[in-house]
Length: 554
Image (cartoon, rainbow, N blue to C red; front, side, top):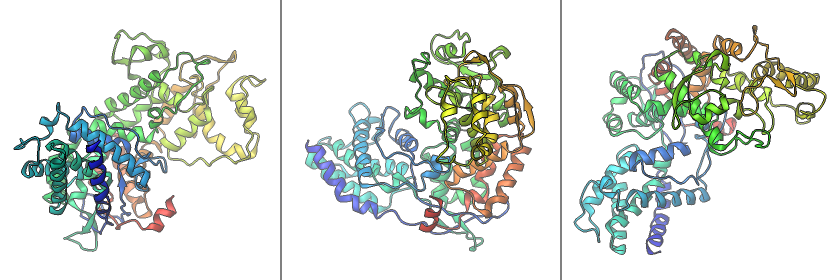
């Protein structure tokens, strides 16, 4: 009880000071390998729940279980990465972060792990040791803040650690309180992207070298920068073309890039809904369905994406490939044999399995369906909006969905029900865009299992994607692979993910150039990442986002 009281008291006393540390961004820029552009604004970006957890574990230890009860992420314009620039911390949200910090620090500095984390030996474990506390707080704080602490920041936390250690009679108890103060600081919870005038051309505004370290790391690794990247940032290397390129190559060649790829596509495809338990099915209709099954289905898709893109294969082939990974549980749902009793194994679907491309995976078909039935409209809407970047308007508020929802009436198949539904002129425009795509996937039920009939009637999966006809889901996947909007759409989505905002007019030429280079590279996502982070769009800015701009986008 005494430690808890001291912890709360000290954190409350310094909270006001910590909040003052959040300042607006100044202005800055640099020359880059690509043409100059009129870049957009920067803003504070609150760490997403995944970034919060991953950053803590990378700095304090993989053994740590990070509490999930923190403020929820904000999804805007289809991305959590964009919503992060609008997210704040409310008083109640701060209490959640404070509670999480207390749990984390107790795990980080428990008797089993403290020797690994605290690299100095205190003179006594029962009282303060300012020299050891200074070394620990300075080293760990640098990783958490993604920069070296100022003298004032370091001194304040050493004083907290010393006072608490003396009061508790516990050196490590004092470190816990000081460490918790780092974890609730805005300098950890927010990515503060500062900028400055370019020394070579003061009319251009560039991100500082230190800010570039964080921007690079959270895009390519989705976690806090490592010591080498922070050092490069603090030495000014990341505003130098050649030195920046060296660091980019190091990050792209690291195994951590797989984490970055997973995070990008998980955000883009809204896979967090699996983690939040929001993908629910009627188990009376689908007895095979379990939470474990759908979690493995999500993992199957992410493993497929990572393996494909890490091998530098053509991005477009993700929508036609038969190569994947399965567990025995997934094998039951896919109705294919999986010899390995536990864990994952590579798997290539045969033609008879009728599984080719990501859109044939259980994950997509379960995610974009209703609890009791499939949804050609939701599936088609996903393809149009997320994969082709085409806007589908929200349906009118007074639309009657009863025909579509009645699966026991005279209209036996989804195609028949949708054809009757779109006789309404208000619905026809959108459904004409979405339904032919989704109907090609009707051979997969609401949990993604293969079926030949619906209510005893053979399923017709034929259709047309913007002039390219197909007979089934495999043919639709090929049509999607060759669609001219597929590559440019990924470029736009990745740019928004990297910048934390939508593109502005002055960046459209850059997106067009990046799309051309993406095609020239045989649609290598690794090469696209390289081109993007070396571009002026990633490195320069018009300055801080104004409050009215934030309101306009909301």
